[in-house]
Amino acid sequence: MPKVCAAQPAVFIDHTEERVLGIDPNDINSIASVTIPIPSDQPTPLPAQFDEKRNTWILSSSNPSLRIAGRFSSNIQNNTVFGFIIQVAPSYMKVASLPDRYILCDGYHRAYGLIKRGITKVPVLVRDFVAFEDIKYQPVMLPQAAYLGDRPALLQDYHNENVSEEIGLPTAEKLIIIQGLELVAAHTP
Picture 1 (tube, one colour):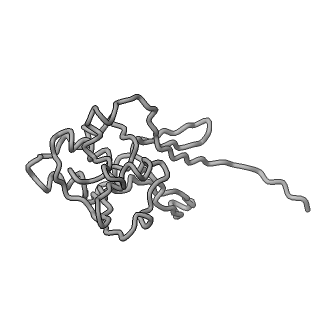
Picture 2 (cartoon, helix red, strand yellow; picture 1 turned 90 degrees about the horizontal axis):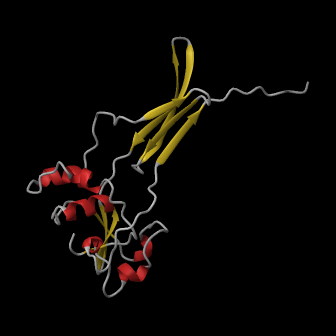
C-alpha cells in the first residue's frame, strides 16, 4: 500500500481498528480474510426493529453494503407471503491500476486500520485501466490533481499530521424501511 494513491477526502475512523483487530499481521490468509473475504454460508445477523404503529420494519447499519438483494413471494400455510431479501454484500479492497499509478477504489476504512497497525502489504483485487476516465468513481472525491498530480496523496497520508487532520463529521447510517400499508381504493361504477 505504500505506493497506492488515495482519492477519498475523508475516512470515518470510528470502527477502522475493529475491522482489523483480530488479524495476524504475519499470516497472509488472516489479512486476506479482511481485504478479500470469502462470503460466509452463514447469514449476517441484521439488527431490525419493528414499529407496530407504522407497521414498519426498520433495518440500519453503519456498513454501506447493507442492501435489498432481491424479493420473493411464496405460499405458507394457505397464506401468500411477500418479502425482500436483505443482505450485507461482501466488500473487497479494490485497486485501479493505471499506467503510472495505483488508486484505491474501495476499502479505505480497512486500509486506514491496516496501516495504523503497521500492515502495508496486503492482498487486494487489482483491475487494469488504460485511462482514468474508465474508472467509475463516486462524485465525492478529492480533486483529480490530488491523486493524479506529480505528488499524489497516498494512503499513509491519512496518518500524516502535516497533510491530514482528525475532525468530527456526522456519520451516516444505511437504512432500509419496509412498510406494509392497507388502503381502500374507491371505484366509480
